[in-house]
Length: 509
Picture (tube, one colour):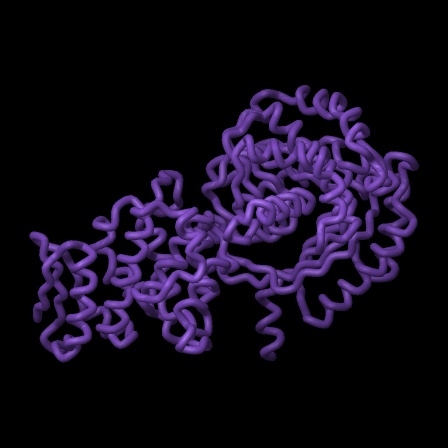
């Protein structure tokens, strides 16, 4: 098998044919973790004319066929054998959908069948779960021609519904021409559809927002509030923040949203309606927190295709391994490092008090950090601590909240240096408590002790034992490896002991 074929065997292609966009995303899989390595979309607006004509947009059809032909050529060139397709609301509803799909079959060979609204809801839920199995609450996926709602709990989706509440359904095709008063006139219709749903579906403390319009609205919120960590996955808003954002987006901020720098018109014009829909959902659901999910239908298709044993795993750990792949110093070092650190983890306090975590709190963060230890081989040594901090803060790894990202980034920074200034101090002070900051610094120092003492050798690290006894921090080494204890190692041990408020001692077992 050629090298290209070996690489392609880890790749999965997903085509998402929606009411507003047609997209190809290629994911590279690594165990329970998968990450996009190619992402291309065309804002074809297939469902733009549905409300008035019941048919697909003429220009949208042309753009969609061209896009799918290009996507298929890319997939064949990359020799990707696994292709997943999600064709959603527009192709479920349009009277001429079958003719489009027939034309696509002739030109590309793709045999496409639209998925049901309930299946779309389920796959969107699976996408949210794939990013973090701790997620629980109501998932709301807003597309161009539909709104899917579904509950998730204990890593599984419930029964979902699909409502004709997308912007092309409710307010028509020329979205940029609508005024705030136009949006106000459809509030009652929206409320009636939502309020008719069973209370069991709508009752939730957490509301997860899926869809490009809500993601872009959240990005605008981050920019307007100078939020110091510019990643949207798991970005959280309070009820009041989300409600104010929604009211502003279709109210006094409507013109600002429509002309927001960097947004295409075809995307920007859907944002006021997404603000209106957000306020109507909040009015009924009344969640405590609103969470942005950058994962949805496409990721749900991939996650749903994984074997059960991979779905059962915590993707964070495979993600960290994959992110550190190629840094020889991290290979086979994480597990021995975790064993080395474990006796001290209880002394770090409760890093993140989340009983629903797939692994105990301290152990989960420590294991993730151990798998990333030594990251940065290809980075300039003079700037490596700061560059590693930013790499970890924005790592394409699932299973992390924003505070957990900040914690891991600070831990890895301190594994290189206890003196360097934090590159993004605003994120650290906003997202972490003083106790969490202290714990991250401590964990970083323990990692550095293990690396220095063992010379980054997994074999040598296994001959070193660390424990705390009667307020003394003891580093033990086998007699055969006693030369590992140097003044530099003793200095590192004292650094850890100082942070713990302990005396230190080295022993030969």
